[in-house]
Image 1 (tube, one colour):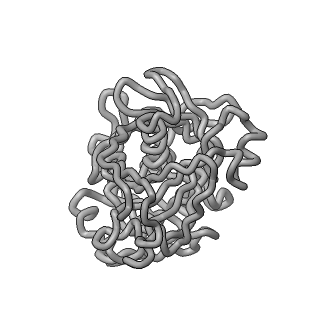
Image 2: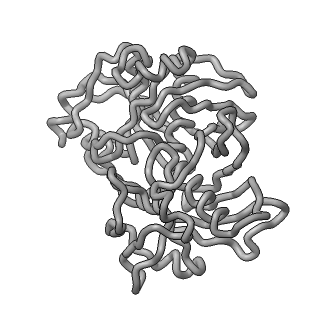
Length: 305
């Protein structure tokens, strides 16, 4: 690992997080620095590297192959979020990551974005529109959907086995450009018993794997027109993280679906790293979009020795 990092000597980096979901960030506007999966894993190693749940490379969309279709859809999507899991594997999107990514662009002087303004960002999960708030950012995550729509009418489409749970639990698989499988648990005590140092077993497993959310609806579920959920998550290629933005959206979507008509459009999702806001509203394409809001914090900058 050390030799792998040493080969990147002189590379500038930053470290940021969104509700404890942390990332190594590098600016590479010209798309000149391709990192091998081993280098990414070494940088994200918490003992021998910088440490992070993932790595994000900021590259102009015109300078990365995946950005071509993005620019055809919206030429204003100048920047592409090239995102990798902590093990070096490629990932489509990250809800916390895209907020931190935009904050990185702002703090590095790569974009100007005032409160109330919006920025189009290219990702492998499509274009995401990020608005700067007075505190934090709000992301239009786009439409959500079922991974197995033919099974969703039953309320579950898969079974999840997890260490700490005596029997497999029914689950619902949700896509937000990346895959999620949501399990409802009875209470916070049960949530605490789940051992997420081991990867949950999902059957059937979505084609490219899945993130697994364990969610507990509050009692009462709705207070002051806001739905409330507590959640833990096991992210593919990472393990348990303090927070997952797309996972929070998936958990809210699944809980709202299970609860039926009359449930609110605004949700507060409590994770170990903090609380994220999730709002459902009609999108410009006529489909229901999910909006994620939360903080983004830069904590360090440096140069690899």
